[in-house]
Length: 350
Image 1 (cartoon, rainbow, N blue to C red):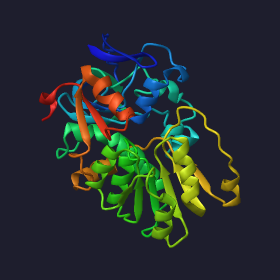
Image 2 (image 1 turned 60 degrees about the horizontal axis):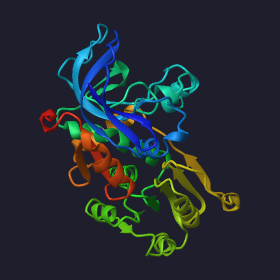
Image 3 (image 1 turned 90 degrees about the vertical axis):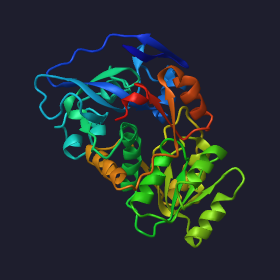
Image 4 (image 1 turned 45 degrees about the vertical axis):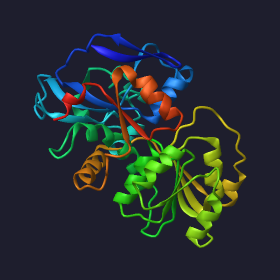
C-alpha cells in the first residue's frame, strides 16, 4: 500500500509498504481521512528529539471503512464506517482502572499509541488496529467528521478538567488544531464568557465565523486589559493554553487570576526560560493535559449529531501526495486551522 513514512526531521516520503497482517482481534481499515495534528507537526519539525527508530508511521486522527476483521471480532463488520481511538492501554493498571488510559503504567505510550510511536499509523491506504480501539460512526456523521472526533475529544477532555462554572471567565490561547477544539467544546458545553487569543489573521477570520466570543490579536491588542474588563478586574479563571509557545505561556501567567488555573494542552518543541515565582506567590494551578477517553469520543460524536460542532468552515482537505506542502507547511505558518488528508479520495464519503 502507499503510505507516508517519517524518515527524519522534515523528511516525509510516500512509499509502498506492506500492510500488517490481521490478527484474531484486529480490524483492517481502508482509511478515508486522517487529520494532521499538532503532535504530527512536532514529529515532522523536531523528529530528532522523538527518539524513534526510522522510518515511522504517523497519523492518529483516523476514519475509514472496515475492510477485514479478525476471527475473534464480532461487534463490527466489513463495510462499517468507523473512527479510531488511538490510545491503547492495558485496562487493568491503577491509571486505567481510574479512567486515565493515556497514563497507562503497563504499555509504553511512545510505542503503543497509534500514529505516535506505534507501528500503526493513519497516513496510508490501510491500517490494522486492535478491535478495542474501534468506535463505529453514527449514521448521521460523515467520514470527514469521524476524523475530527479525536482532536476535539482531546480539547473537550481538557475543558472538563478545567472544572468550569457557567460564569467562569476563560481564555483560549491559540486557535490552531487544538485551540479550535477548545472553542467548539466551550460552545457545546454552554460556556460563553471567553476570549480567544490568536496571532494568525487567517485563523482569526475563521474563528470569528465559528464563535460569538471575542477573537483578538495578542500582538496588536491588549490582552490583559481585555481580560480585566471581562472579569471585573480579577483575571481569567482558566486559561486553556493550546499554543505550546513560550510567549503564550508567559501571557497565560500574566492574565490568570490569583488562585486561577492554566490547563496546558499545547506541546513545546524546545525548552524556554521561565521564572516560576509568580506561580507560587499567586497560588496558580498548572494542570497538564494529554489525550482523552472513549466516553468523551462518544460525547463529541453526539455533539456533532446534535449540530453543536460545525465542521464545514474551518477544515481544509488535501490529497495524500500533497500532505507536506498543502498541510504541514501551511499549518506551521498558521495559515490553516485544520487539515484533513483525503487518503481515499472523495469517493470514500458515503
